[in-house]
Image 1 (cartoon, rainbow, N blue to C red):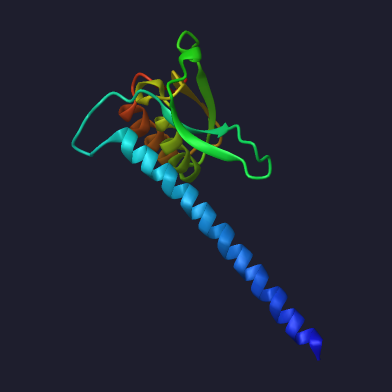
Image 2: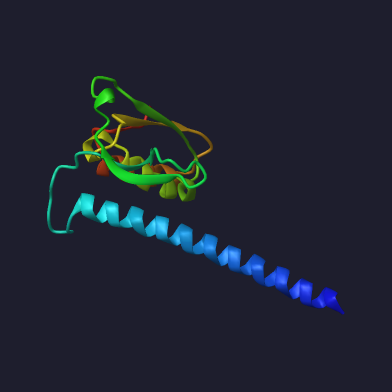
Length: 146
């Protein structure tokens, strides 16, 4: 009869540790969101973005409990380097998701990419129209080779 009690205890501890992990992940995401909000400011306020908030490991005396902090990295070491991303484009649904990250990482938005080159693979007319609308949003940064 001790087996059911043991089973319940194990199940409760697994759920408790999963909840603790979820809470830790949520806390990490909230910190990232707060850093982005602080970096970007209000919606009406337009300002030049100076860098991207990144997590950096902080040296501590306890190797079992590492600590990270969010710092604003301007990527000064990449100022004189031209960096282009190559995206194989064919499905609008995937490009729709990826585009937010591409625009965030453009140099004009504080990122490290000077531009994005789209290589066309298995596209439809609707996909091409969507890509043209993305290029109109970023005319200097997005390249569609015809």
